Image (cartoon, rainbow, N blue to C red; front, side, top):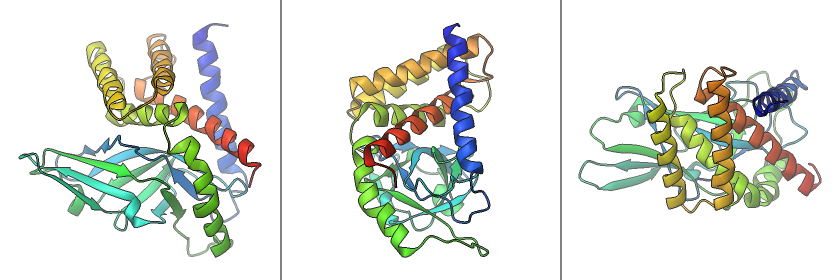
Length: 274
């Protein structure tokens, strides 16, 4: 079995695992409370749409093993609005920082393993600024927005356990510097920067990845985390070159899904489940 085939099998297994968790108890109401991997000094640049709205993707993980995983596009809100900071850099170099967690919503992607945030036009306009970025604070937690017909909503006790002791226990694997968390931060930064289709030039990809690694090193990413992310990138280069994947973004999304699912399983193994 070739390396490329083994990687493809891993991709498929990861997606099947997430799909099964998403479908399990689909009829049950409120999905899992999620944690978001903290920025840990590595702010995420926003991708802006011609000066109108801006978006970004973040790594996520589940904090409720017995609740169903979210389906694609499930709406979430931050438990603590102060956990999301908008970093605005003006042309003169002045940097403005302000919490915006109370005015944005997150949407799940690929089960519990990642989330997207879209800033409304009132906040997401990039006109007149040099750059926009987002920082996720430590212990950031997402609560599912309750549906009107929710037959099994989150209880106050469930929320307290997930946002309190379980989120604190998850900090070692998902917030503090570690190979898995550092690799997750690096891969999501690359995913955010990659176009959705295979339109990248070879030189463009090399520069994008070099910039991603440089940013990670500047933020204090561990050598092990950088090596792990680099292995993921190289395996995707091989997958795209062999036409197993349409684009680097598609491949990196799958590799990231597998990474987060594996790390989340480690978390539950260490905590003895929920």
